Image 1 (cartoon, rainbow, N blue to C red):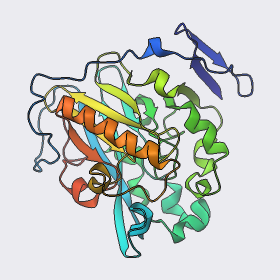
Image 2 (image 1 turned 180 degrees about the vertical axis):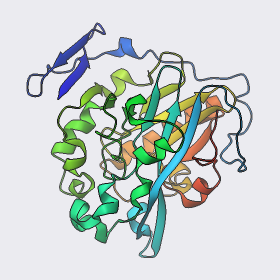
Image 3 (image 1 turned 90 degrees about the vertical axis):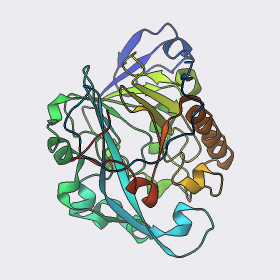
Length: 318
């Protein structure tokens, strides 16, 4: 497995596992952007009406899901009851002239083949309802994207419902926060069930690690289309994504920094959290960005919010 990092001069460093140098601050990689837009005074958009697209600007955001998770409300909204609650498991594909990008990939296909064999006792709390055909590789093919054409796999974090793309795209570089990658191998006891080591501890992967606040707002292509926003709390190395499209404009993918609109509106904490304070601060940070950009806000697992968006393979945003 090749590990790619950057030093404090922004120079690329490649190393083998066990020999990687300690990361030094690299703020030069990600200067603080000006998120403001001329139309930012308008109210943030959170919903749109379904439609089918027949043309494209050349940059596209496709919203997929790998089935659902059947769980209890308390596991999504902390301390809010034992009622049954079923949530979508979204993931995202971005078509870009400089290369296709997959964000997370949802559940691994193994969760559809033998969920208890792959997830173990976790299925007693989070039961994946997923067909084999829901895997991210086959869904990419449904919109004309073959595995070898994916350039990047971006990991919001490494929880089991977000690792479906790891190792599935042979030419892709995988980008994750360094603190998240390290934590996934040795999580706290209360988070251990959320990490399936077989999903991310794979040979031959090309990893690139980001450095938290030092690389915050990392601009993947240098054109402002995809920015990675450090949002710890739910997981120590969680990151969200600001996608700016030619026609739609900014789309803020909170991922699990805000599971639902209740989390977005400070009415609930995540059912699983490593730092409640960090989680609350991350939501506040994202709300500020949404206000400055007039972004369309896509929360991580909100059933009603998710219903309102255009879904792949039949539609997309551009």
